[in-house]
View 1 (cartoon, rainbow, N blue to C red):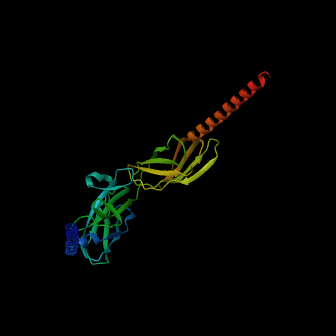
View 2: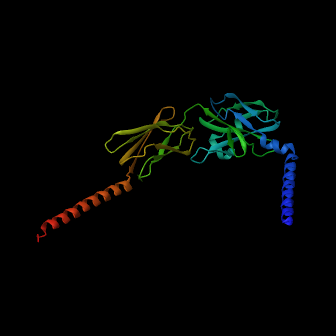
View 3: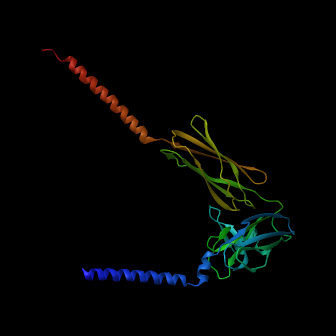
Length: 317
């Protein structure tokens, strides 16, 4: 008994000692280690839409905020960006890749390096010098900011590309701009037992500029009655990119064949986008259960009728 008590006391003392050592090591860690995870940067505005003519200069500003209790040294850089996926995610690219949509070589940022005091902000001046031979249409670049020591900045806001905090700039050079887009896909699951029904819209933009289609989706039943009309979710589609947009017909109890009609427009001249999709919603399990119940009732009634008829035909003794 005494040995057991001694072992329990020894274990308890070891646990207390281990906890004390762990707590002391955490408290003695360099403050810089914790400061790195407490820093928070934000960029305003995250996106800018600008317009100019060939040979003109455009001026704008970007504000960077340090919302932490520690100073942070920031460097600024410039990169073109394009969109390759169907979610509209911008990606850094080299000027050779961005081609006719390049903008980075026209941008000058000042200053390129700066130390922000705790809870302070700094305004960066951005000058865009548009060449005389600039192609009409959209040009895209980002002014990005990152700590000199590198790494992600936890809690960052704005538009993040890779490990950098960035402000995206879209510049439209005036002139004859080609606009062309089409609906690549407009569909719903062909057969469902219940709602809601998810509608997928894929629009491909082959214009010289990004577009934001606006429109509605209408749902009609087999008799042509309109059951619902809702707006197409507005999403920016970059040149030569495909954007997937989802909308939901929020109704559970449906029966029959339905038609979904997409009617939208895009561009400066309001060019039309139209598409149709058809889908069936049949609660087949419930229907099968009802049919089976009816059959059971019919067969049961028939069996009872036959039994009564046989009783009536029996001779009396």
